[in-house]
Length: 375
Ligand code: SER
Image (cartoon, rainbow, N blue to C red):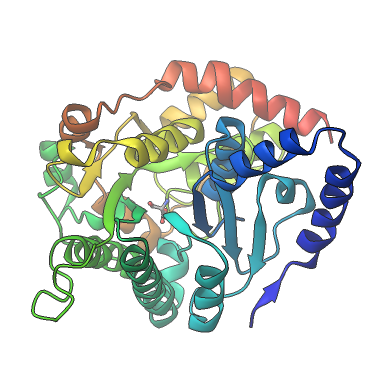
């Protein structure tokens, strides 16, 4: 079902009034033209963790106009950051066609997905959302590239879940893994992400290679493999790297936390501001310099105990216990301890701004303390 947010229309009305009251119509027209000429960015899953941070960044930078799609309506405070918001399902082809018909989309950030734990609870639904949904968006972006006569950039967050290390000994031996190693995911989510990386590459390089339109503009797919993300503002749902952010938020709220993985379970993490930096870096990268369409992006690597120690330093009364869930732990055990992101560093200058020390001391802890003390 498609619900076009009516608040958007309501919000436009006062803007029209303002224009009518303006003294210099030429200035008004110039301003309006400058706004209209900014490229439109479509963000799916905009109401999720990454989406909300990305919307703020796009708005601050001011170079793009954001149009969003999410299953749930965007909260009021995020709506002014967008030119239009749609509440609906990415499985709804009619909705996506409507969105594309109303906006000249130049960039897609396709963030909507069902994460790894949620995906194991309903693998078929995960496949529908993660694969069929992505296919719909690729089709929209491809049609749009044809209409514009130039490639629409399609930014796709993939994940460390595409890796599948066979056992802990191999995980320790492997250390930082390269993009092409261990591509044997053990979750539906990981399989979906890996396949969609291939789909995106196919659309960019080979789509309709035998068809009459073989020489038409193809979309420009770019994918980042994210580690577990930690935000001070939001708590993720449905993921398996969630033990990191959950532990931190529980401590900040003064709540007990029972960790669902062992103390020694170690995976790569990244602070949310760096995830947004990576998405923007990938968007702006010079296509001619991209040797591949898939990139690891790394930041720091922590075990559950490392996170507990960092949390305890600032919240000495934190109550953290361990009650490992065999399956969720197995999923984390299959993910690498760290990623080798040399390719991203070389091709488009990726470099995290927030190492573990800065991430905790300057972003996570102060922001989270403020967040829960403001309540
Ligand atoms: N955060 C994701 C998950 O836990 C992994 O990319 O499923």
